[in-house]
Image 1: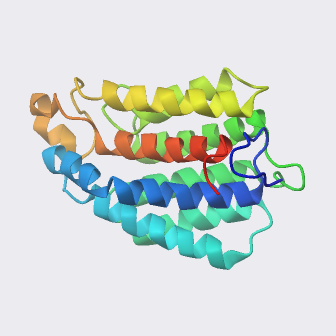
Image 2: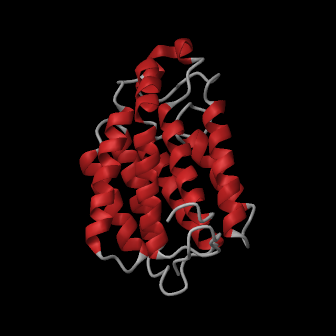
Length: 222
C-alpha cells in the first residue's frame, strides 16, 4: 500500500521498504564524511565510505529486483551489505537485514506491515546484531541506538507513524549517549578510557537509518 508523499503511513508496503533503502542511502551519503570523522577518532576511519558504498549497492539491488515480499527484499539487502561493506559494519548490518527479513517471511503482502509486525522484525534484526557482535547495550556500539529505538517502537503498537517517529528520536538520543561511554567492544575498545568523548560511528549510522525510516513513514519522501 504505497501512499503519496505527505501522507503518514500506518502500514508499510514492499514499495515503502524499497523507499527506506533509498532514503537510507541518501542520508548516509550526505553524512558520509561525518561518519568517517567519527570513525577516525576511535576506529579505522572508513565507516562513512563503507556504508555509502554498501547502501548504494543495496539501492541498485532493490531497484533491479522486482520484489513482491518484504522478506525477500530485506534478505537481499542483507546479503548485499555483507558482500560490499567492509570492516565490522558489513556483517553486522547484513545480519540485521537478514534476520529482519527472515522474521517477516510471509508478511507485507497486499496489506503491508503494521507497527507490531515491524517491531517483531526489527527485534529479530537487533538480536542478530547482538549475537553477531557478542555485544549488549552500554558497550558503546550501534546497539546503544538500536535498543532504545526498538523499545520506543514497541511503546506504540497501534500507531506505526508515532512509533517510528519515537524510534528515530530514541536512536538519536542513544547515539548521543555513546559519547561519555567507555568502549568495550571492537577496535574502539583498544583505546579504553580514551574512547570517552567520542560518539560511536555505528550508533550514528543507525540513527540515520532510523531517521530514513521515519521520513518514509511520515510521507516526507516521494
